[in-house]
Length: 262
Image (cartoon, rainbow, N blue to C red; front, top):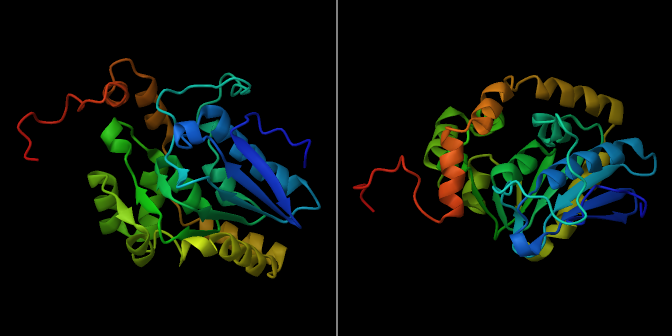
């Protein structure tokens, strides 16, 4: 696995028997995901599926952060391979994780938001530290997140999906587990052991049968309207542009009422 190239130094690959670990490791930016990192996670899933010696992938973070979502500056770092030109939603790993024949486990070690939460949701099992927190903050930034609109109601029901998407509030691991956002919660110090346990349990099931069951489960999801999402993101006058600018300038976006009660 030493010759694996995920296109960025901010993702590390480690092997533990037939299981590969993809470790999100960008501590200076709190593990915010660059385009190269999103694309690299997608490549990690594809590489595990192509390697006959590997049977499963576990994705985790470092420190107290799993992944807070995309770097709103859209920045590349030194040594990063740029995402191939012309790719938009194709660089995102979420559907690739969801449709992976090899089991994908998320070991959620801390803050888990936006694209990071989608990685956990689309995994076969999300094993979560009792210290983890969750949020869907896209509307705070003016981002129309088509993947959440298509997937979140299937996981938690329409009422909870409306609440999480429209309020962008933070919830703790216990609430995330209670509403069905994630499936397993454990003590923080047991996270690695419990993630390996989940992978081992899945690998005891018949792989061809498992693939068919996953295909039938995935048919429950609505189509993802990436066109609306990316047209909005690319517009010079979009709310996304204002939301990202406000975030970088550490101010409220211009759509927030000035007299809004605290």
